[in-house]
Image (cartoon, rainbow, N blue to C red):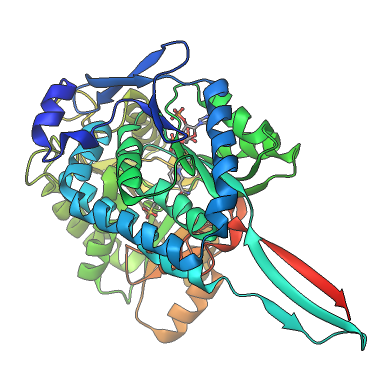
Length: 492
Ligand SMILES: NC(=O)C1=CN([C@@H]2O[C@H](COP(=O)(O)OP(=O)(O)OC[C@H]3O[C@@H](n4cnc5c(N)ncnc54)[C@H](OP(=O)(O)O)[C@@H]3O)[C@@H](O)[C@H]2O)C=CC1
Ligand SMILES: O=C(O)[C@H](O)CS(=O)(=O)O
């Protein structure tokens, strides 16, 4: 097991990627007051290293440096910015193995998933390097003979991000990619659980030639303080947040004072619907992929699995058999399908959801308890007899729990699936074209997977409706949130 920075450095081809100081204005710094906080390997809770515990003053300096660098950065051509971003992408892919080991060490996901995340994260840098060249304007036929009308789009200025621990690389690049391509300055504050992946990104950004000050990484355990600096500092013109709906609400309230432009990628409660005309084996594969990716710790994981009555028992049996084959262990070891949960609170939530199902008449089909490995390892679990009265119907578990609900009709399935304040991702398996059309149109979600359990890609718009968020990330739409539109009316 990992229990020190020496152990982790010994696993890396390039130990310099394991940076343990914050990155502000092109400098590697300690906290002004020398404070630090520990970064732990969730598999055992061992301390990997400590990093500086920055406060608002250092965050303010990073914001000022981003403002100072932004005008020159925006004055470069889109192609010049693209070339540097492309170099950054290349460096991320060349160092994929090391970045994945650092990510697994601090977050716990299996190395195979971590490598996948590095490629996914890098794809946003690659994609938006090119999208930056397509920030087109408009000319509009004048409303009067002596008027000439144009519309241009300019970088919004300094953008800031607050990101969660579950995708410590990709959630940052999904935001800084479009921001930097558009000509913005960028200040990132990663989750306290997982700062090392963000710092490794800064090491490679420096090597790629990103100008000093244009990109900073604030390591801090004082998330509320840094969030307030981002929301209250008048230089920050854009806040992009990924995390829980509860925290998103706090940030929106704080940002309202400045009428700040915000993107919010928030909580989910994804329904996964299996109709009686589905290919059951494909549906099981999709459920396994969607439910147990990152050990259930993603906002787009299937959180509720609705199965039509005629195929309920067959699907439950097939799913339990697939779940029983999952290999739980230390993510740094080969052949592991599920690592530890991020912390004890995460384990507690899974246990509470399982107990609530049992208290209301449901049953455990497989799993249901902490794993023999101890720590925050948990048995992948399937529960049956689940109903809308239970907590798991309305709360995001964010763990390896697959709750099976039974339904009778198509109308009932759509109604139950939409019975939530969330609206991020939904999935269903069916083959009748009329049913597929009616269901994909009837689901109130920003993302719908039809006969697939994995939907994430940099080329498509990712985001939710209702209380799952505001805005879209990735795709040709993702750069819009880092631009301001200017209408110019010229009298000739
Ligand atoms: N829609 C999406 O794409 C995603 C949504 N989520 C949702 O987030 C939840 C799980 O992730 P989790 O990290 O626990 O979510 P949190 O919302 O608790 O934390 C997300 C980030 O916000 C920071 N934070 C917490 N409180 C504040 C505050 N008052 N002001 C400023 N920043 C704050 C956290 O810092 P720290 O951790 O250091 O406290 C972390 O960096 C789930 O509900 C999940 O669905 C998660 C990932 C993606
Ligand atoms: O943080 C998350 O859960 C991600 O947004 C999910 S994905 O984009 O990696 O699928």
